[in-house]
Image 1 (cartoon, rainbow, N blue to C red):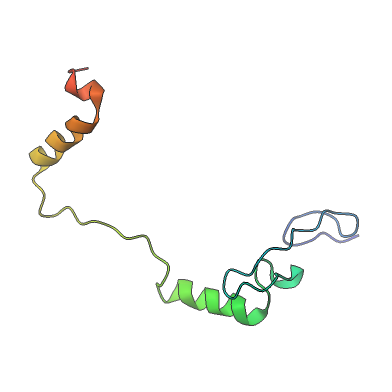
Image 2 (image 1 turned 135 degrees about the vertical axis):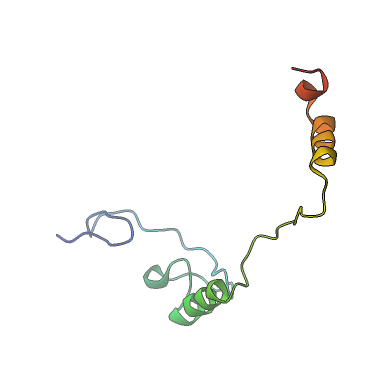
Length: 84
C-alpha cells in the first residue's frame, strides 16, 4: 500500500477532500489538482504568486515621528493610558 503524497494517508479507504469551487474559475475542483479544477488554473495561480500579484499591502512608517507613534498607540491601549 502506498501513501498519498498530499495527506500522508494510505491509498484506499481514506477520506477524500471535499469538492469545492476552483479559486480561479469557480468550476468544481478535481482531486488531482485540488483545490483547482485543472493544471491550467493551478499554473495561473502559481504565476500570480511568482509575479507578486498576491501580496500584503504595507504602510511605510519612515515619515512618522516615533514619539507621535507612541502617543497614538497609547490612545488605543487602556493599560498604557493608566500608566500600567
